[in-house]
Amino acid sequence: MVMEDPLLPTVSPVMKRVIPYVAAVAIGATGVGYAVHEHHTAQNLATQNQQVTAALNATNSQLDALTARSTHSPRVPKQHALRQPLHQQHRPHPSLLL
Image (cartoon, rainbow, N blue to C red):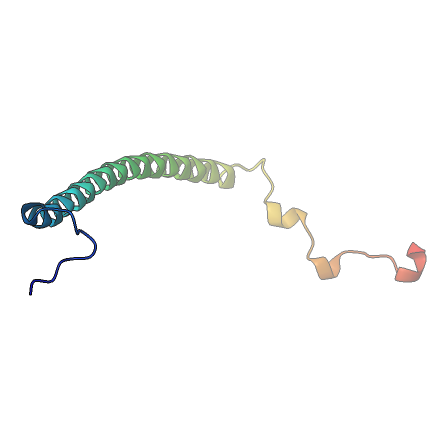
C-alpha cells in the first residue's frame, strides 16, 4: 500500500520532486539578492562614514587652530577667570526673595 502525501494529492510524482528544488532555488536567489543589497548598503554607509570623519577631522583642526590662536593672544581673557565658582557667588537670603 502506497501512502499519498495529503498536501499534494493531485500533483504528479515528477512535480513532487521538482517543487522542492524550485523552492530551494527561489529561496537561494532571494538570499543572494538580499546579500547584494546589504553589500551595497554597507558600501554606501562606509563612504558616508569616511566623509563625516573627514569633516570632523577638519573641524577639529579648525578648533585646534582657533584654540592655539586664542591662547596666544594677550587681548582675549581666559574664560575661567571671568566666572566665579558657584559657592563664591553672592546669593540673597531666601527671606529677601519673598
